[in-house]
Length: 234
Image (cartoon, rainbow, N blue to C red; front, side, top):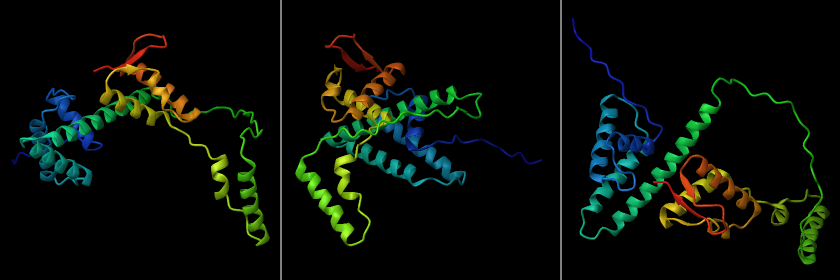
């Protein structure tokens, strides 16, 4: 009787997911990756996909080319570019790792619940217009609207976007931004994260991002004073 060998290949959500798995299995330091080891392991996994007739997504092949190029550049006498490319790869891996951990945590919070039902509640809305504009700007936009009305065309919303449009900044984008800043710049004052914000939405998103990172034990804030410092937990 013929014996049939069966085995199962792991499924990965993308090339970064595969790289993190290889780093974990080989117990590599994510902040100082041994590119030679990582490239060989990655290419072996790609070959296993091909041997098993598994369709390989283009992003896996693109990452393979990127790793091979990085390994080649690292062998050159002057490898400033190699260090820059390596730092970019480490930054992407750290960002993906944080997002993956947060997704897993959110998944556990919904275990045992098939649906979420909430009684509709009426939310109070304040329609008072609170913005202030120069009279010339209002006049120009008024004339633009009147001009379209005389041609019996509906007024365009485009001229009014500069007046009423507001940019909403997501917490997830600020999580990535704070991680990048700390990874590249090292420990720094917590107050410095808020100096470059340009809107109330960005300010709130930055504050919530810091709370999420503290809760996930990705960063540490030294104290609650104005000189408090924030740094990555490596």
